[in-house]
View 1: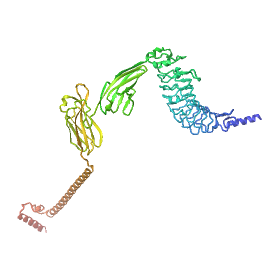
View 2 (view 1 turned 135 degrees about the vertical axis):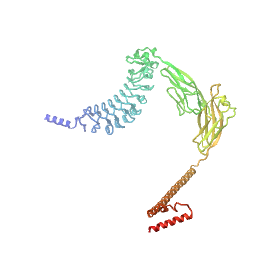
View 3 (view 1 turned 60 degrees about the vertical axis):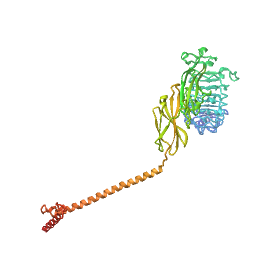
Length: 585
């Protein structure tokens, strides 16, 4: 009897998976346990390609590790509000659809390690409001959204993102994880840690940054002991071996910490390379103050043109370069100015107020260095012919002529006059504008020019034009400008409609003339052919009838015979023709 009940139980288990206790449903090949109030569904290493759909929604623990699941989402975890532990380790998951875990409000632990995730989006982990342990190591992560952890910032205790391809981690989110106890970021490509990111992580007991690309670590009160020990932790485990540390004065704070190991080594500078970090004396952690190696000394540019100021500096650590304008303000990036990390300052469009001495400041942890760059803005005269030059303004401007004005072009000529011997001209500049637009247009010409053809002008408008000479005054070696002269001219009106009608008229007339000539030629040619045809037919008829006569009688084919043109001759020809006819009869 007992054997019968045992066989009945085994057959039941084989039909619906292995079920312990009262379970409404259990996926095939899975093990479902209900030895206590908590229901566990164990589907590890079952060769699954997707999350089973008939998992009991009351499950508290769900293990799906070591399968071949490629993505999760949809209704995989819908209504599983009591799920506490979810394991998806060592699958081939490459995609987590948004809101996949939206109903898992009770989940405490999520294991996603050993998969193929490359990105964590802002809604991939939404809904995990009570998550405490997030394990996503051994993936292929290259990007983690700043909003990915928003739903569990205050509850997360353990975060493991080691063995990925992360160059940057969302420090903005990490610094707000008030309950964080363990942070593992080892074996990534991280080369920067935001300063002060650990300042509020009072519960942090372990930080692992082993085998990244860190050259330095920012000082933080959490590690230096500047803050008082908290009731949660008194000793912090800090691991940063395997990084190419640059052992200079910026890491002196770290060297002063008490450590029980000496596995970390320095990569640079050369005299400290491969030496154990904790065995190097503190006095060898030195820095070199900045040294400006080269910079722009003086620069002259025309007003409205682009100005590029350069400043290069060396030092240890690499100095940061700032620019200070002539009015003692830090030059910030704007639509008109751009300051680059290599020390270059670009002023895209210069104005008169940009003229002055700019200061290049190179700063690092060891000090600073400065250099002055003199920027000279060559002002342009006003349209009224005003100056703004450094030459002699009392001289009478030279006359500028405008010739050959059409609706779209004009020829400008100028004469340097006696200035050709007094100054060395570098270039000429033509500036002009029309009444339809107040914007000045500039043309820069070589010093050998004395004329220029303006093109693409607007028809039927007035133009104001000035010609300037930019020269070296040979005394101060500074650039100066001189207004050679100004002129006003008007372009001719343009009537494209009238020209179009005239062109059509001429074209039609020409077509008619050519057609008429062709018709007349064809008529003349046709008449000539008809005449020739009738004459030849008449001649052939006379030859046939007079073929047996004398040679003289055959001359009747030539109209009027071959004699002279008098009446007697003609009469004889006719008589001969009659006589010949009588003989035939």
